[in-house]
Length: 548
Image (spheres, rainbow, N blue to C red):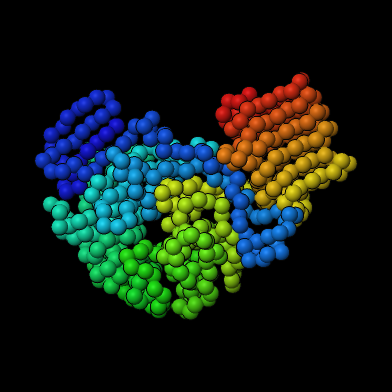
């Protein structure tokens, strides 16, 4: 369904033209510059599974230690990440230069904003249903033909978008920086009753947070922190700042990143509580994210990486460097643009140097490595079991952490943790059992093996003749563009109590047994089920892609 309306009005009382059951057009005498698409059949092509599957992590030791790089038998890595899907950047009538700028996650939906580099004003908004971890759906898309959208927020049936517009050519805009309030219910934009707008000083609005009926918006050069009343976007308060880049809220305190000054922390009445001086050059007109993690404030500091500061004292705790300096990448793109903390995991969006993952400890941060993603990573958000990486023209990449549930961890607690090779090989006559969350390279079972937890395998999984493998938990095998098979050889047995995803074929040789335990097991096969002779399949299971 299409709807069109003008950016320049808050409430439309205009000519209505019904084109068909699928298309509705709202028009007025002004330029039409907002386009809404709610037809999912037209949007489904924006979801891509071409590169879905197991993600490797280029670990710090492998990146810095030549001897480690040459070793073929490395330990199995932590963090069994998988790429669920990519959402392609929006394209409108040949305009294909949009890049994802921000992600906000609430409930079953991810809300994504897009902007355009350079002098052109062009932006978009997406709503993605992520309730089904196997199959995200793009449910609604909105284009701004003459405005950049730099950040997005959702609360109580409305999407709030902030960005920049050319006030000199706009009929209504009193300043370049704006916030828009758009009705969005059940994953769909609804502009039939218009869009409310608020404007503030500054070249470009760049971040937003809502708390207790107040909409807090930052704007950059010669801008402000402006506080709007949520109901009508009237201005309740405005505090000028030289060059704000982002904000973060934590338990009544608001941290503001000012490019020429550092971090300013405000109290609940917007009084200045403390300042953390930061002299780092953050670059001209570039958004840089800050985030709270316990008593720490983590600051995106461009070429320096991420600075970690004590919220209590304001002291610098450590710098987390950018791990790699890739050949052929402009130095201006090797910068930390955003940081995100999620239950002991710290993520750094390092532009052309990729998405870096670290472990947060009580005192220090342990670098893990660079996640195997394509594109320049401009922004990262993480909530629950997901990571959302905005990667330039690659669009939005949806990553699953695959953390074991609390109930799974409890059921695995009596099984010893796996700490061996990334090339798992269970020999004939061996009876082994392990728990954990690991990344394997190769996986071969000739004896008996029980795994309890969450696992990924980059290459093939083979259960040899008369062997048995029992899985309690989750396992993902290979990638959609590098398919590998799970093969159960003659008279071998595979038992599944949990979820298995195979980017390849499930091959069952003569006499093989596939057994599902419980009532909630699932199998998700991107290839085919190949049976070579008589096989036995027992138990209840959900066949996600109907391959049996």
